[in-house]
Image 1 (cartoon, helix red, strand yellow):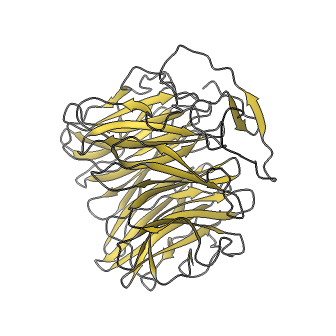
Image 2: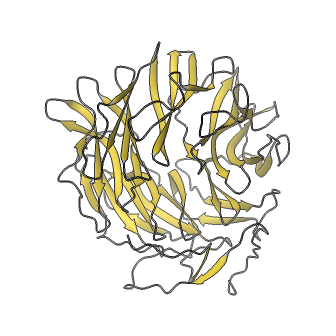
Image 3: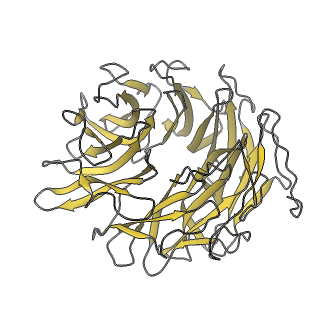
Length: 488
């Protein structure tokens, strides 16, 4: 943009079209150009926490969160258009009043009809706490009379997820308190379509669901397989959307076994669909006293790109690596990831990234590329998303309850900084931030959301966009590849 001080060059392999977008609608809060004054999605008393972002076909997003203004961690939802303007009343719509005093993870996705679909826990009369699915129309009204229960029986449902398949199906999965994982598929009317729920039962120990993602008409699940307290592995399976059949064989794919180390307790990594029926996985594990990171790409047929327990992101043996965020560059099959890094004493902190090409070569060096070197300033909540052919990596600095700015950088395929200055501020307000999440608009920019607080565990839900040139605020020109807003 002519009035912005940053320089930006699109990668040569990216064919981008600059679209002139005529924004319509009343004057209202929208994406902010000031990192000290971010867009407030939800506020008020209590806590607005655990945000999730799901990109809509029109360039905007659904934003969901748990809202504790009434003391019950209710489920709420807001719709933002591509300009960051809320389409529903302030505070969004109430999806479910729950009266819960604590939270677990939950799921958000967008179905083929442009509806938001959510999976969460709800107390059901006579059944205890079970997993339910809600479907909300683009105008904010419920598509079903009430959330549909997908679990049942004496086993309590834990941390449900949801995935909307290309054929209009809605798949929900959850950990069961008896140690298994339950999976159900619904149609657009909320009716089950499989003859019976799928139950993944461990041969020993427990399964704890980590993530669920659509893969065309099918879904891919990943989970922590705890054979014992010290034997915590990482497994995956692909289920057919038609009938829930296991597509990767009767035995799930073992991404990491006990010979490599153990996954942390309470750690549930996300994976990403590769656009071709497979998925990319990046995870943290412990080898002795050191934190390590590995990646794997399972193709549509379940075959693994890398042998054994995946490919390690770095060959360094002196530092700890934690909580990676990753995506697949669909243009050339490279895996891009970033992580939080510390020294051996865990007294210095940094952010590092890596690009692993289709042949398994570490493009950004054997130890990865330092975006922020090790210093005494804590850094974490790392997010990595693809924007206009670039790897955009965001992170929070500092620690609770001090001020925690959120910053971002963009790298090209070779690891060179794409912006000047190389690091931009997304948030500079004198508050701490937690649960940072990121997503990519179909209009070609990134968006991030987080719980913003000032020295307490209560706070508001804020969000910020990030344009492909490193600028903030509503862009009258959007970088996209032939993008046209979808009215749904």
